[in-house]
Image 1 (spheres, rainbow, N blue to C red):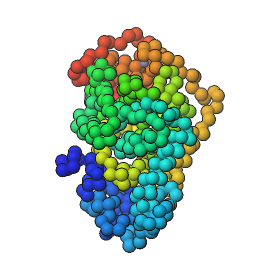
Image 2: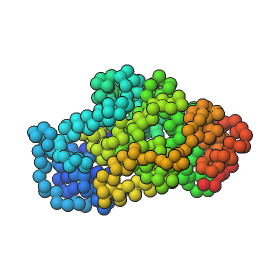
Image 3: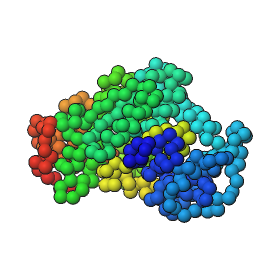
Image 4: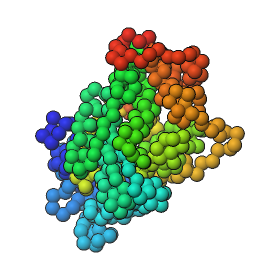
Amino acid sequence: MSPRGPPGVVGPAGPRAVSTTDSTAAWVPGGCRRVDPKSSGSRSSICFRAFSEPGPSRLGSILENQPLPPLQDPTMPAPQCASCNKARAALRRPRSGQALCGACFCVAFEAEVLHTVVAGRLLPPGAVVAVGASGGKDSTVLAHVLRELAPRLDISLHLVAVDEGIGGYRDAALAAVRRQAARWELPLTVVAYADLFGGWTMDAVARSTAGSGRSRACCTFCGVLRRRALEEGARLVGATHVVTGHNADDMAETVLMNFLRGDAGRLARGGGLGSPGEGGALPRCRPLQLASQKEVVLYAHFRRLDYFSEECVYAPEAFRGHARDLLKMLEAARPSAVLDLVHSAERLALAPAARPPPPGACSRCGALASRALCQACALLDGLNRGRPRLAIGKGRRGLDEEGPPREPQPSRPPTSQPVPDF
Ligand code: SF4
Ligand code: ZN
């Protein structure tokens, strides 16, 4: 345990607090080094350079303990900031190549998010905005930036965190959210899967779906249930809009995954900056959708934000990891690949014959659904029947035809469920 908090929490510019999952690179005394030990050899991490600042290097200070070899000659002097022409540049922006000091970079980053929100008409004046807060870097940066912009946008913010029930992971992340809420004086509401979904936690879902091995379906369930939980939490606090912290890299990964799965329906509706709130759902948007992950990390660094950066215990099994690896390779060959993919999805048009039918209403909860049951109700149905596999893909028709599910069992011992074969 670090003196500043749980492992992985990046404290306010703490000299030994290191984000272990974010990949970036910096000019530091003694060499250009990567933050992420797992990204050795990645050209994309080399091309994003940050310069050491006069005096003790802030980026250098969080990197100095990384036992990685220098990537190249670190003696290149840091130029003047291209914006203020006063301070030394601390980083070179990957998209524009502009060398900026930390303060000017943060101002530019906030202005770009403001432009995304205003140009996209995402959050009208007077909106009560539920910010999906996970404690991770993206939602932390989103909440901080929106808090800075709230007076100009004339919006009010409410943090909504979801407790998925993942032992050894979510508790520490929620602690980071609570610290943020206290420091920024923002109201916080936590909603839990166990309360919303008849006792199911993600740990219970994982045991139910794992069979004799490790579950590869956790993120499929978790993604659907978290979307529902966030919607419930937002309604609970009287929000008019929901925002999430997905950045450009997240969106590009999603586009790639949808292509790899041949999921034309998701490709057709997943490209925009948000959804207008069809079928009674609250309007949702992603103000960081055009911001790269690297810049999100640097914004958190220069604003000295406190966030949680451990990886979820179920993440290694997720299909998204393959899309992420593929995207890193693409980005190494073509640095604009991330944003190109995001914009491709925005412009994608399906031939009429390939378009999915307009969604109807879930026969159980009334949410938007392309079948008799919405995704969340279908997944819960499968879990409650002890046949979670049926709730994914082809099996859903079978579920719809099989009659009512068993009653939810709030404190069910997951091992007593019939074991599906994933
Ligand atoms: Fe849920 Fe998967 Fe994310 Fe873990 S990695 S919180 S299981 S979506
Ligand atoms: Zn439903």
